[in-house]
Amino acid sequence: MTILAFLQNPWHPQNTSKRVIEKYRDNQKFHRVVFRNSMSGRRLLKALGPEFFDRVIWDNACELYTSRSDGLQKYSRNHMLESIRENRPDLVLAFGNQARMGMEEMIFMRKYSGLVLYCHHPNARGRTQADLNNFAITVREAVHNHGTSSETMGARAPNASDRAAGR
Image 1 (cartoon, helix red, strand yellow):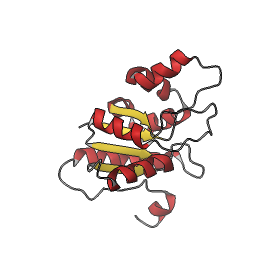
Image 2 (tube, one colour):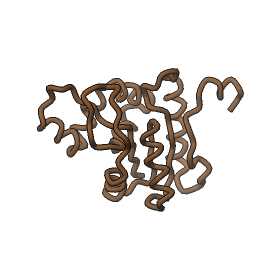
Image 3 (cartoon, helix red, strand yellow):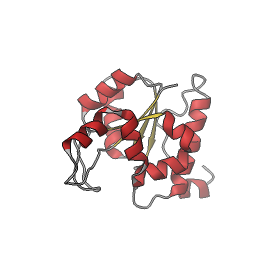
Image 4 (cartoon, one colour):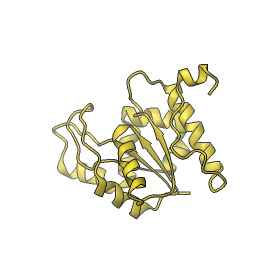
């Protein structure tokens, strides 16, 4: 099963060389190593575990980067479509609002018809590691049940209030 994940956009400190930025964009192995050491990557690594984390093709909803961790670029329809066409995923994980909006457009435009699971950004305010851990359970269940159900289409990460309510 091929799993593609979109986060919002990359960020690199202002003094990052063009060569490093291009390598991050073009080399999945290098991208994964750099991402693994970011705050978002560490949280997802903890939730998914190293073996599962390394199965995922990590990408961004927009290829344009910012020079601050809180910088934001709108999703890029063309970039996301190219990534979907190139990787042909069975499952897409969309982290954060930009990735969600981009995937909703891909589905609306009938450019992707596979399974999509939505989650908050790994560093979203008011969300915890436990929320990501619960999302990881949903992801593992979707992978395990691949091809047997479409019930998880558009699922989101459960949060503390969902757990309190028994959802």
